[in-house]
Length: 362
Image 1 (cartoon, one colour):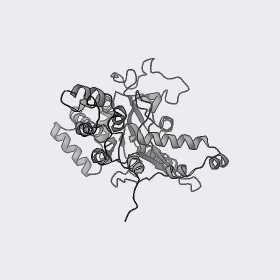
Image 2 (image 1 turned 135 degrees about the horizontal axis):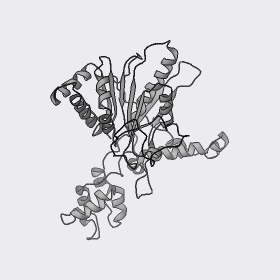
Image 3 (image 1 turned 180 degrees about the vertical axis):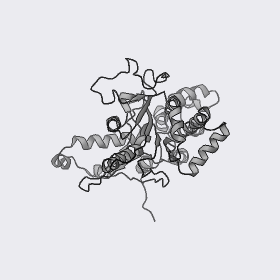
Image 4 (image 1 turned 90 degrees about the horizontal axis):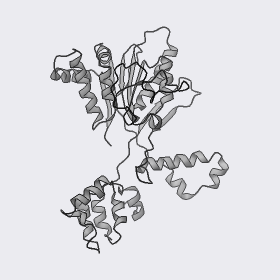
């Protein structure tokens, strides 16, 4: 039999107290509330209050319990309504060097996103940030041993489970044209592939090298552009042919670009010391908008028999939008005659292993 678990550990590691409560949870709480005026937002008359306080205010289960101190429910009904704490998925970027003396690199990509209007961060991201901050401030073994405690040794252990995608792999040949589409942390496998490609190009002798395009996107250029320097350096080294980046929340992020190769407005221009000054191509608001701007090149590369398309990132909206945009490009550029033919074309590419996705839901 398994060892019993404490209530503290149950609520800390098994239940999601940071989720958004539904009305049925509030109705249950109302049964254990001393003040009749408390939790009226669970009633039909309180629909507007529920919308304002819960949905728009993004108040969680824990916020509700704090906001109504007269509400003191037993543990059993709480556990009945609290959702299970689900694992957090992060993109992994790793590549190995041919030189055994160079240690293998393993990086988990995550973005530190403070919650607007709150002095808190995402649950797992905030925890990782705190761990990283603690480790970075302890530069030597003496300080590390001095501050060591039992709780630190326990909570510094992270259970990690690798979720594999056996079909999502890149071509071994440098002559294969590759189109990569991955906003946010979806760039992780592409950085890994391009690092491998760089090494393969250095080892090869005058072999034919194909085009490689990367369409990626972030909210803000100066806040969350993951591995900007690395990607720009890969462009300078001719490992990556085109780097097209969208910044959805920056000024002018949704503006159309008449000439994709032209410099952008002075508001977004970069100084000469910036690596991406003459390398980064500013796309549309989202990656699918950037795809439309370079539709002719996407159609040209896709029409080649050995080309590959890779999509990595969010499955709910991004992957579907990218697939629809890709289908529209096939129609608009005359590769296929209709939308139905475009969908059949994409399915055939998937069957051939030439349109591959590594996508996930939150």
